[in-house]
Length: 339
Ligand code: ADP
Ligand code: MG
Image 1 (cartoon, rainbow, N blue to C red):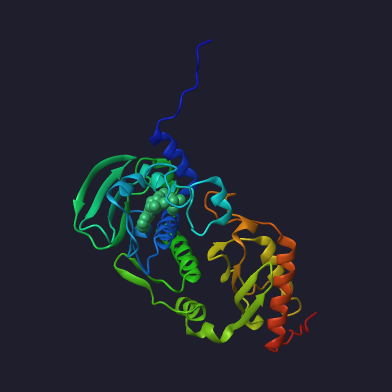
Image 2: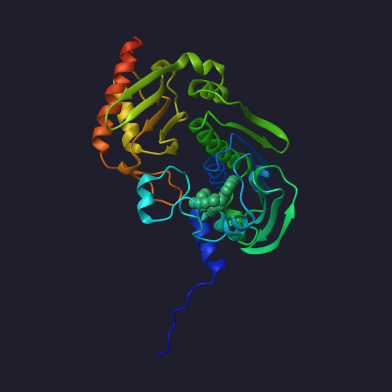
């Protein structure tokens, strides 16, 4: 029998990888925001049209890219963030897989404008379906602007799968808020169809939370602090009387990265034992700092799940820290007379 196996062309491989990284416009926002943060931006603007289906643009004032890097950034597995496999265990950046821009460029019309501090003039690139259409010198401020237009233009099944503008906008706001909450030292804005949805000045964590969720949130926050050899915890839990009927404001950040963890969520809920009415969910904004060596972020392409070396210890520390805070703030148990 003749040989059957052949390597997939790059644009096909990129399109397949895109399936994992980019589910919807909100995924594009997350990837672009993370790149801007890794580029040490202090101000990041997000502009979207039609819930991101027509346009997602992220503009930063970060370090920009050289002419060659600008082109390289769209290659798959091309990254400035790690060099050897060992670097995976001491990650200081959000990115490291080198596949976001390659994936996005495979399934959208992308325009990149970028300039570094050293360069006199910037570089502008147009790319679609992984093909670079043009690259030329252009006038653009220091930093990077990436516009992603007509997401999934070449994958009709994916485009049709997108939900209503209201639902996609909700996803975008969720992603935006997660990133903004993790980085109060950076100013962020979000504009949808010309309407400003958020304008967040640099702040501390408490201010950032209230800037996003409203001034009334301030009085609901109970500070949580703990520092052990395993983890440094800071942040807030919402007072029990403000617990919600749905899981809304529940945020874990590990080394400034938003993560989901059913296990750690359980620790929080357990620490509220006896304080919550049935079927209500506490709010929390908890920032955990751990040794990068003690976690594995590389278990899923979107990096929202991570593996901890010592999950049990973390659970116990978190639970007791929150219990302590709730106790200190004289949070009284709810007496449920109906039972
Ligand atoms: P990763 O973030 O995993 O490295 P990406 O595909 O997201 O992979 O980006 C590829 C590379 O492009 C990055 O490593 C970085 O060097 C460069 N880059 C992307 N976005 C920006 C930005 N906003 N500012 C400066 N450099 C950027
Ligand atoms: Mg990236």
